[in-house]
Length: 226
Image (cartoon, rainbow, N blue to C red; front, top):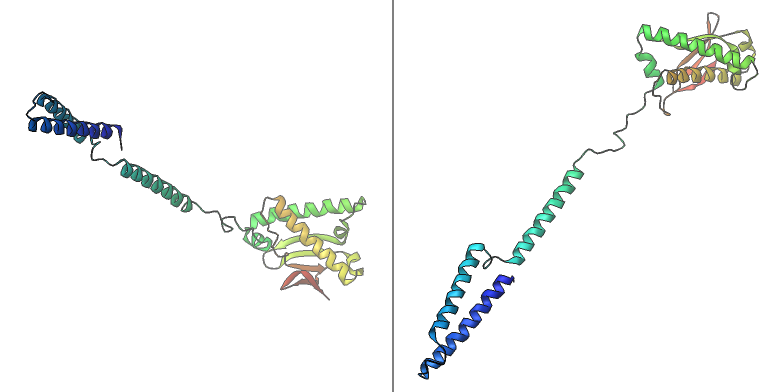
């Protein structure tokens, strides 16, 4: 209930009292008990207040309803905000780009890019050979390789030297895996995104004109030797 309503009801209360007293004095034939003009004044004031309330919308307006409407609007806005947030861009595990497979990247290169890549790959092999000759550990695999290059039809071609032929099969596998890792590393150096789930590069090992070993089809990091 608003202040204006309180004033209006108070005026009605005073008017009711004055009317009652005026009727009582009229019955007693005592016109001086309360004069009718006061009743009329009060009635006039009450009427003016009523008109003001009707015009301003304070009399019939329900503050409780107004508050409820405001609360409802607030809830609607909050609900709308939640819907917008939930319908916004979702960043799930699918939003991150899946890393490419090394074999697929090499196969996608055109002749010009592949030729440049093979030059860089051979340069990296020579660098690893220098590291091995200087006594650095982890590069000895490179001393058993003459040259290597990737071919669209045959995969990674590793040409081994005579010392390679004296190695055991597990040692030969280590050399083959070293060549595969070197090729993958070169792709990363060139800015390619290689995933941890990328399969090893399909590899063929040659001594002279003879193929003496190759990657297993379903496990390219493992080799089959003659």
